[in-house]
Image: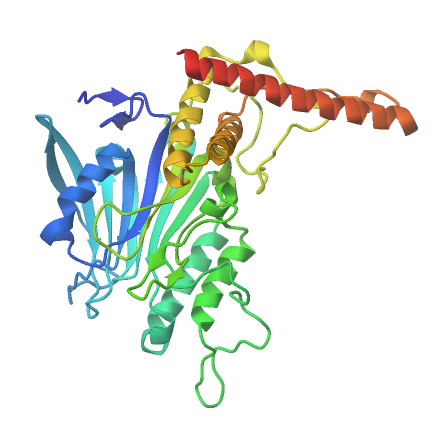
Amino acid sequence: MKLGFKGDFLEYSNFNTSSSINFATLNLQGGFEINKKHDLITYIIDSNIHCLLLTETHLKDPKNIPTTRLKATPFKYVQNNDNIIFYIIHNPSPTQSASGVSVILSSLLYQRIQKIEHIPGRLIHITFFFRRHEQLHVLGIYLPLITSSKNNTETLKSINMYIKTHLDSKNQFKKNIIMGDFNINPHKPNTTLMTNDIENNNNGDVTLAFYHKKFLTILQQHTYKDIVKIYNDTPSYTFKNTSNHTSYIDIIFVSPNLISHTICASIIDAPIHTDHRLILVALNHKFFNPSNINFINNTPDSIELNRKNSLAHNERYNYKKIMKDQWRDFKNFVWDNFLLRSTKNPTSNNPQKYINITFENIVQSIQSAINAINFPIIKNNHLQFDITGRNAKNQQKNGAKSSGYSWLFLAILGCFWLFTN
């Protein structure tokens, strides 16, 4: 394994050739120091994960209060005679054994930490600073069970206030990942606040899940998105209990201005024993090592929440300005995404179904790569022409065909590059 520097960062694993830097969250169910640390670190290296949030660590420390300064403890891992340093930040609960959150960071990210804040046992907020004034805020959260809300009222209030204050404070360089175990499925009906939901009344009653709903309402008001849902229309469960009842409660939310920097997101079986699954999002490595070349003029704050499936009728890709590095990244993106989708989607013994699944994985992988790379686009200024009636419809129709052919041509070129290099 070769260690070295590339841009700002110390590398490990296959970062030289990887198209992404991965962030993930997993409910640990305790036992980190006892028997899970080694397997997790091995998995982190193999999966190129540079930030892993662990919830329900079962760690306690009565001295951990909000003003306590959390420390990043170095941990040396030896693989193939190479020493790889990780940094572990524990945020134990002062009183509850079934709580606690921790973060494992690579050296790559550790050296970019600007600040660490926390709510004991429940929330950890790490701010990373990069070149070009870019800020990445990673907030790891473990919300209490809804059934225990009454015993955790003040903690829930603190979390909601913290999130609201943080999201209300905006600047163009600030991008956010909010991930963890939220103990509520945001995609079920009535998971945001309604007019008849109350925090309290004369009897001191609280509407069931009021604070959990308020948390989701805050995210919704700031147009945060469940990144797994963007890449998977019908994502699988994230939690299964001993009675085989499943739910979707482990989630990665991202800010609107970070969506275009993502490559893929998925739900993966955990590498250690737990009743939860691991949630992962891959970010384009160019977010961390920005190129000096601007392939396309766009601003980080004007990003569509729903990815474009095709170019607009007045747009087409400028193949002459696509650089060699972009084609290489395109190949890597397609291949990484295809492998991820192939491991997630079950194969079939039926030849026709197998072909259909494989074809769909290829199509989705190509589309994700196109969205991630930002190939240079030519825009035809149709405003300089007087287009009315039938001529306007014909131009729009022909433009749509051109956009479709452009996408198809790019897909063919990409596949040719993929399978011949």
